[in-house]
Length: 95
Image (cartoon, rainbow, N blue to C red; front, top):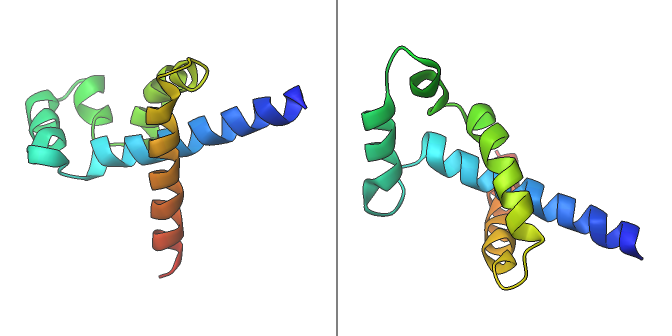
């Protein structure tokens, strides 16, 4: 049973990372917060190049989201992002 819970936690954190990384790298976000962040960090360094890359953002967000997923009372945020990530993945696969 604990293996199933471990796999479920990993899957949920993965979906949350997928959604969060796409939001930060590709979307405007609420009140254009992600667009403003990308504009401020854009530059010729690794941060500037990485802020617009969902794979790069996902690499750095994944451990944070995994820690949140195993933390009681905070894991709701990860589940919320995971549901949104699954919805995003399914919507994008329709095309």
